[in-house]
Image 1 (spheres, rainbow, N blue to C red):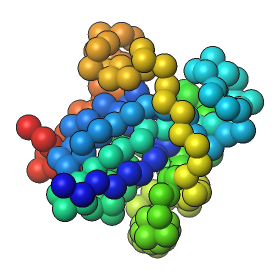
Image 2 (tube, rainbow, N blue to C red):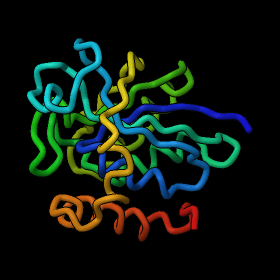
Image 3 (cartoon, helix red, strand yellow):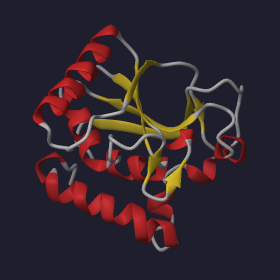
Amino acid sequence: MSQEVTTLAGGCFWCLEAVYHELKGVTDVVSGYMGGTTDQPTYQQVCTGRTGHAEVVQVTFDPTVISFKDILDVFFTIHDPTTLNRQGADVGTQYRSAIFYHSPEQKAVAEQAIAELNASGIWGRSIVTEVTEASDFYAAEDYHQDYFANNPHQGYCMAVVAPKVAKFRKQHLARLKR
């Protein structure tokens, strides 16, 4: 089985992780941090917005089952790519929208996807998603991994994560693992 990796930022990593775990062709999802200047950052450090890191998910997938373009199609439906450094009430550079590409091909696909979305006018505003070369990835603390699955009744999960997962399931039913 061939594997490909991409790293995506679109607000709180709990939301992205919960969705990508359910996507056919995805074999692993790890919450973490990328794009900053601090080595081995902690959640508390990233939350200050001073490390330069974004909350990300590193997604491993089988490109014979799901394409990178399809991964991005899901990405652009589960967060607002037009808000700079924020998703809903989560505000700061750590919540920016970003695609950290792992190959020139991923960069080209990401730039094309953004151009097509901007041309379509579907969002009504320009997309601000960064397309940046992947840098050092730091896995988040253990308690952040599988957070939604392990804490479905936690307030943030009920108010923010669950609705995003429900929207994903409704819009991408054919792509669900189950």
